[in-house]
Image 1: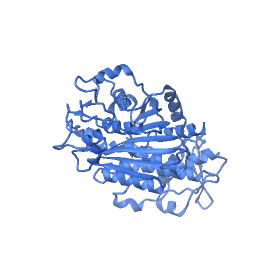
Image 2: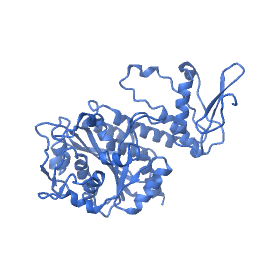
Image 3: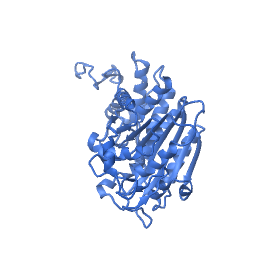
Image 4: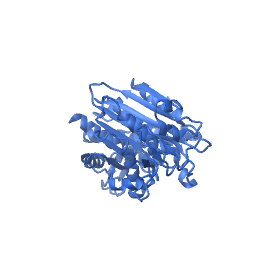
Length: 433
């Protein structure tokens, strides 16, 4: 230990060998309580230090007096580090990854459901758009519903017009991948209703207000909101939480063609509001607006609506890639969710639904424009969506990036979960109170 300079500091590792020179024990310095990604670092360190042949011949176990919570964090972190999106790579079978034995006393169902949910989010976002269109997104939702014996349904193409989802149809009408509303329902009617709404734009060209190439490169991830609500739904159902769950995904591809909606068009909405199109690249709020209206209808009102959307570049300019902006129509939720996010290492940061900025979205010929004239793009997006929400219902809008830019242990470059775990903790807190 002295020769290697190991002092037990956070993220230090020391390999101890027996008298045959074989590794017998590995000492790891980790700050407590454990970070979710502490053992992601250990995983990556072992993978880098040890040969594939050795890794294939051994497994690792955690020793010491860790709490059950720390063991759970360690196991989730290890599992997340083993994630690889290698579906299209020829060398995917060659990798040798460190294997961890289940620590004693760990909450196996929670660990399994968490890893499955987070990997599901990443994989859906990472999948290229030529492999993941609106039908394929619906198929993924159907599989998740089937796994948990939930009901599944969808409204496709011109049925959207017949059933009054005009904005979802308008955004997707130019694409051969037909627009649709995807719905999952699960749970007992005796439990509080929670509705999750996801933006499922499977690719966003920007429409006729076409994006410059650098801004279109990652637009396969514009269905990141849908991926988040499917991942969150999977863990809620897998853990059998006492809620009645409803999932709504507004799925469309914002393509360019003879049937594209245009700048200056006036769209009807399910809410009855007319919307002037100031920018066809502000399409996510249109499809989600119809879904939010639908979420608020019916005799049984949700106790909480949460929407996840990869909505604005303005949120990224304010908070960077790692921290989603979020909005709520209830002030108490702003402080509550921010604090929960910090506690569970899934930071989210509140921005205001500043009502004076609503005038910047005025239209002389419609009830509202889909963009604002000022600089507060993320707030304009939140304000637009608020027009489609029943003010009596608790509502959270999360404007997430859903992408890891550079790559970190447990968080490889590519699709990323941002805000899902924080919302899960909020829901669990609510059902316990």
